[in-house]
Length: 303
Image 1 (tube, rainbow, N blue to C red):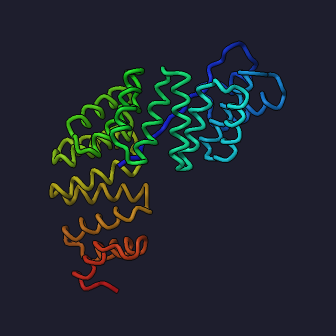
Image 2 (cartoon, rainbow, N blue to C red):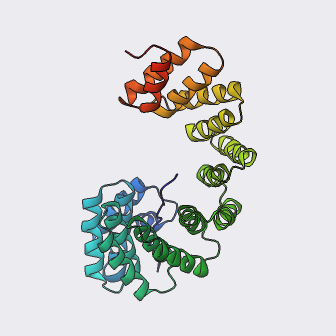
Image 3 (tube, rainbow, N blue to C red):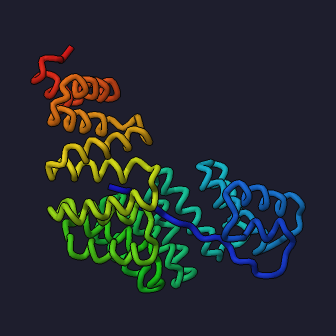
């Protein structure tokens, strides 16, 4: 199951600026480019007031993406000091607190961002994430509803709301939200999320199809392969499962469950020694893994 992902807003250019300003506020800048450009704007003293606050806010965004959270927090504090009515700064600072798992402070900042800009869909979605992480599913659901109401094309909000419905075991609404997410932004996680709902609803063919789509859009990511491999084993397609786990382990050799499950596939196909090797590898990665211990014990190979 994927965790909720929080996006953050950057400041639109309010007036013309030089190349450093454009890179600082540009929506396509990478975190490194953003930090470098905003640092240039700040260090040269070319901006004051709201635009200087914007430079600190955007540098804080870039530092957050780089997971330099203390430095990001310092910048966002400065953005708030320079412009206390700047919704984006509160939203971005809330995200830093969220990464620090200080959800109460995060929610307080999102509250302020929403108070200052009630149209900011991003702040509702981010607040929903923090409420979700505190276990407040109903509060999270209300926030994702609000985000979608303000931006009906906000793909991540549908994904996040789908996860809330999934946790509530409301599979009908979860499927609807994940399907909308796929229409808006058909990426790896969108297909895996919907595949998980199909899997848990015992619609295994549809689950396998979604995991297959995950493989198609991200063929070198292990997650699509190992999820489809599990479905194939459920369906008795042991050779297909083995093939998928071969790929999963090629792209992520540290995944203990892929080793364990490939061991099951090999065992079903009569490859006892291969199964023993895989179960032992699973135990090496996760000592005490009960399923691997049980399998090795049954094979008389537990050391």
